[in-house]
Length: 166
Image (cartoon, rainbow, N blue to C red; front, side):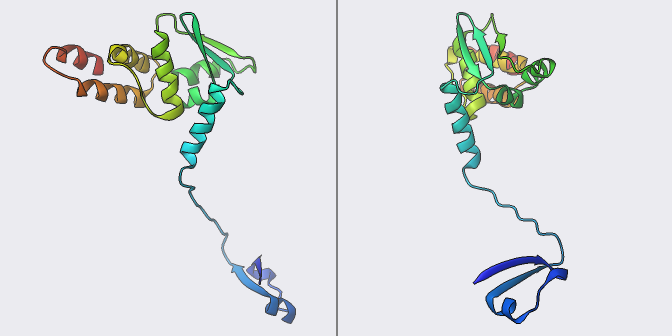
């Protein structure tokens, strides 16, 4: 059986068409939407693989003597800081952004979060990661860090963690 999708006013009612086709008449515009399960995660996985292979990267992030390649669009989508930086310079050249006072492991944790939505960091880096997420205006990462730090809260570190998380 053939499927024929035509506007209502264009229906051909000849006998040959009527016997070989199933008609759908459209009196209103047709709009369909379907969400593919796992698509967003698959896209993030692909972007992360591209970054790890240094494919299509257009920015280098520096901390100390180390650097990380990344994609401007991913960084800009994750925080107002990068959106602002890249809006000011839209050249096609690879951009370099330095974080001289940031530990490389913390910068890597931030970038890994941008490409996965998962925050992995040591408790020793937690305060620096929280501070950097605030500076980069990354609300989701800041909230994730604050929640993780609250889970380690005790009487000896309460004031320090409360101050950093607010």
